Image 1 (cartoon, one colour):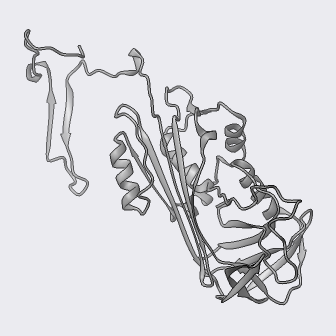
Image 2 (cartoon, rainbow, N blue to C red):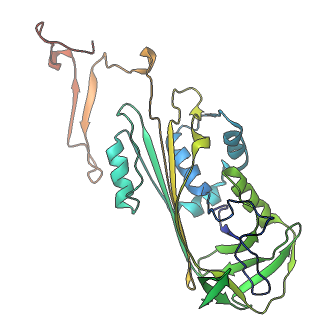
Image 3 (tube, rainbow, N blue to C red):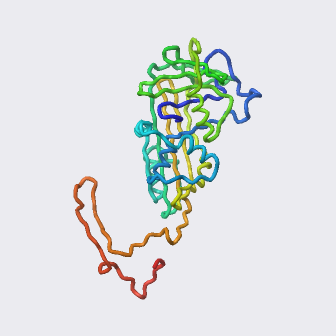
Length: 321
């Protein structure tokens, strides 16, 4: 998902209109042309927000982090409101709780491991859209390999030539307010933030109508692990928090009825070294309040002082004094 109300699918080496073929073994294409990838800014932004509730300045350690935060790290309130319907999150210092939350939400392979004195954050983006005019099932043959495909005609999809691009872009309208899906062939692959940058440039490119009789594009069923190594080391100013582990799983489905984009992102401060000043110790009397979200008053509350604290017996041992 590259923008608040649009996402772009760039098909690699598969022709999306039946007028010519682009071959996977073309010498003009890089050797890793068949590798799919994805970038979900919505899930990444959301998990970073969970990790930074006080809106501290992020401390970057590489150029990719800096470019991402500068260009895509901030959304408008209206964009945030739109995306909130498709996002859910979890913050916990217990790794098994975070892993179980991912499993309960359909991502059992999303697992992190971190100590209890660290923190883990998870985010899930799930967007399902239906085409305004469904397509019909078809087939697409490239280099003697047959792919399941979807066929659509003008009226169900719009098409444009883009200034500076060799291939036309097809725009599929959906029944979901504001959402469109853009399809565009490419002979190049992009990593990390470069993919998001490319999609953003595509959406704002100058366009003119492209005439066609029908379009045939492949159906998609993808689930991949996406590297988030570029996030490692990013931390928060005024705090010792630093991302030590980051993981993302992306799913994408595209058929004759609609499309579904899903992404699960997790980050954790895997090894977090506390300094003396970062350990908070109770030294004064304190409240203990029992509360329930569904009860308007706390059913039990106390203030406990040293007269109620358990005293360590001289024969006992204690690692923390």
